[in-house]
Structures are given as structure tokens and as C-alpha cells.
Amino acid sequence: MQYENLEKEEIISKLFWYAVPLIIGNIVLLSYDLVDALVISKFVGEIGLAAVSNAGQISSFILLFFYGLCMGASVSSIHGFNKALGKESEGRTVAVIGDSTFMHSGMTGLANIAYNGSNSTVIILDNSITGMTGHQQNPTTGYNIKGDPAGKIDLEALCRAMGFDRVNVVDPYDINETERVTKEELAVEAPSVIISRRPCALLKYVKHNPPLHVNMDKCRSCKSCMKIGCPAISMKEGFAYIDRTQCVGCDVCTALCAFDAIEK
Picture 1 (tube, rainbow, N blue to C red):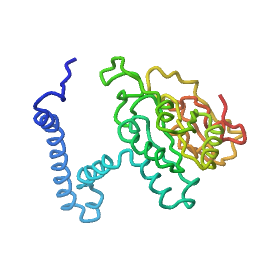
Picture 2 (tube, helix red, strand yellow; picture 1 turned 120 degrees about the horizontal axis):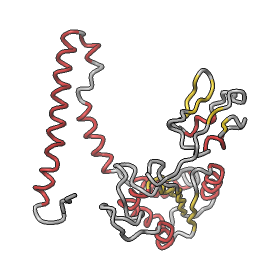
Picture 3 (cartoon, rainbow, N blue to C red; picture 1 turned 60 degrees about the horizontal axis):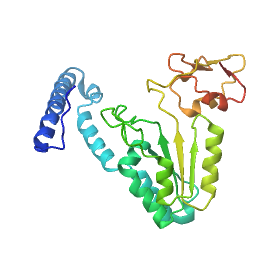
Picture 4 (cartoon, helix red, strand yellow; picture 1 turned 135 degrees about the vertical axis):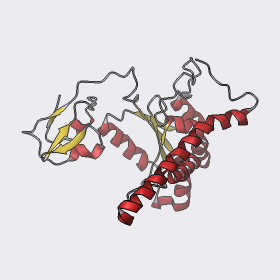
């Protein structure tokens, strides 16, 4: 496989030719939407026309632009909120940021919290990969973008080097411990970091447990298991239902069921 080195000369031209297919694709898609809108408006009127998204690409462009601008802003935002509002927000709010985004644009905000003594708690979601854009490597994984071995940044050591005395690592699958640590850090008047560490379930090397199922005789339809937002869990005929094709056997839902209705 041949790689293009964008760090060499003629960066602008390379970026331009990289963007051309994307621009053409968007123009074709907008043209299709325009024709679609013309046809629908002619035969079904204004009401039918309202169902056609003829500005979807434009709105997506605007939204993604601002997503890029605010990427990593949660850390700086909570620092500002807590400094401005004091007790009104301290102990009641947390900042959440992914490990990759943290490395890109969250470190400076975290350093600000430590340096200025902001009473803020930051939760770093460490899933051992860059999940947002397609499982690319990042400085915390130990591999570069090509998959070759590279330097690996230790998040705990980095946070302590910034001046954080309170750095905790939790397993998000352990809901009770995660909740305990979060409440404990919110109660303490000191800057703190919680690293929620669990490899992404979609990584090839992650081995899943057998899928779970719901015992209909025990299920009380309380919907407590729905609170975690798991895509494998839904309500079917009045009872909780687990899709075996999506369940990875993480056991998180079992901790929420007070009736032991979710079984292996």
C-alpha cells in the first residue's frame, strides 16, 4: 500500500485533490435532492415536499464545522463554568472526553484546571482506539497511524505530571464502582480525573462473552435495563428483550435488574 506524505511540499494541492471527490459527491447529491424536490412538489404538493431534505448536506456541513471548532471544548468549558459559578456548578458537573480527542485538544484545558486549581472533575473515556472516525490509532495506543509500533502516552502518568493528585481508573462495566468513584470525586473540593478504561467492543482482538437473555417469568417490565441505552435491549410484547446478535455479554444490564431477570 502506498501512502501520501502530506508533510512534504505542495500540501495545498494535495489537500485540494483529496477534497475534489468529496465536493463532486456532494454536488451530485444536492442535484439529486433538487430534482427530487421538483418532482415531488409537482405531483404531491407542499406537504409532500416538506418530507424531502433538500438542505441536509448544507446543514451537515455547518454542524460538522462547529463540531470541529468545539472538539475537546468540554474540559475548558467545565473549567470556565466552575470558576464563574463556583458552588452552583462545582460538585454537580463533570466534563467527558474521549482519549483520542483528549490527546488532540483536551490536554491544554486539563493543564488549565490543574494550574488554576479549578474544582473540576474530568472523565476521560479510554477505549484504546479512535472510535469517532473509524478506529485509527492515537498517541495512547502504542501504534502510529500506519500500525507501526510507536511511543505510548500513559494517561495516568500524564495527568499526575500536570499536577493532579486525584487520578482514578475505573472499568465502565462495573457500574457500582464507577458510580462510587464519580460521586466521591464530585464530593471532594479538588481537581480530579477519572479514566474510564475498557477496549472498544468492535476491536478485533476483544473477545465477547456469550449473549444474555431475559427470563420472562422474572421480568417485571420496570425498564431499568433500558437506562444504559444498550442497542441490544428493547421492549417486546411488554417485556425486556435482548437481541442475541448485538449482545456482547458485558453483564452491565444485570447490575441494573433488581429482579435477576437477565441471565446467561
